[in-house]
Length: 550
Image 1 (cartoon, rainbow, N blue to C red):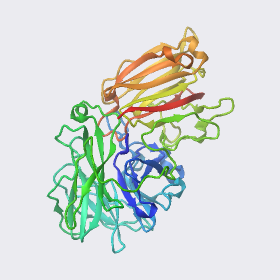
Image 2 (image 1 turned 120 degrees about the vertical axis):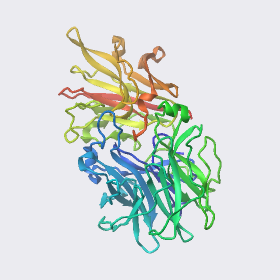
Image 3 (image 1 turned 180 degrees about the vertical axis):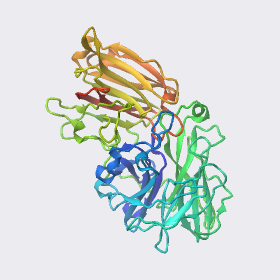
């Protein structure tokens, strides 16, 4: 229902706001973060707001280091595994914040009364994070009990819980809840109360092909937990289903009193999964749930085609949010007075707000990007406290698509100056085509350069070829399109003669897949001096994303 990289979903239904359901997903090191999506029909989703949209809310979002920020290790830093709840007229969002510079992961909480307004989301309250047996805990849940007490739960063997003081962020000593059914990595807890029981929903098996969601219940949060006879609630492990890794779930009830669940999943089936072919990353799936009085929740398993009692509420023509409908075509022409779309993402917050300007003087209908010293991979001298990486992206939301953008090629001042297009997952996994200036016979000349960086698959050879001189008189269109689920291609063309488009390079999407990466496939643009000292201004235009299928 929310295609593209939207992992670890958590949703809440709010009848007071026109019977609208709101969901949040993980954002890791990307900014703006903690997106909030809204829907009235559970099919069409719009970006309502970003709960993390101001650097002042979390200054370290500009300088944070990934928890495992070394080649060969997955990207685990940033903001992830949120829980979204609504209580007494206010939204509560609690999340994991992992920053290697700060040590162990911590819990952070902010609130809003208007989910359609970025500015309504408060600054972050650091929660005194409980410690599980393994030394840390992640994936916080927040639960409001009938007696007014607020409980926070977190991952662990067993899952742990503690009381929270919302005014101070202080927590009580944690106590154990449930170990799960024996799967690895018990995490992603959510507590519900129904018919005199506390129900605990957790994820097990790790967020890989053995992923599952399981349920237990108890008459008391301090009591004995009984495992559901229907476990796992959802899982596609040991199946040949197209959707794999189903787990990290949440439950909610709609206006018609029907129960629903959401869970993360990856598409492609077990064959492609085992070949590490899932470049879109983890997405959000919806499934119907039956939950009889005094009974256990039972879910329909996630399949390619599903049916269920969708809400009778008709969707409004437009919800009052800040962003577009998810999964639609995108056309951005950078008109004067416009802003960068709210669903676009930066890798960390921009270090300098002047790094990106729309339609600057002398360059109408363009996005100006001031080059960063570091490129998308960075180097040993990169210091996130002193510099940023100037790039901006959008999510891939379809298996088959066309992504195109125009680059103005005449910008080079020094060797290494580069303006380009990237299929990006993280700093260790990205595939780029840039216009880069190299020295040939003592003179700077523009070249196309294709190169990849990956820790998941053998890297293709670098390709460098001169930009035809005639192409320097116009913008150059770069296109990314899939040949199949497992191979994408870069094409280049002079804007004046698109019919003469050339295939520059093809690459395996295994380069952009892999367990633990956190994020999913992104497309975007970057400007870098590749270590040079003098910055330049790069200009891009005619940004297009066109869905083709699925």
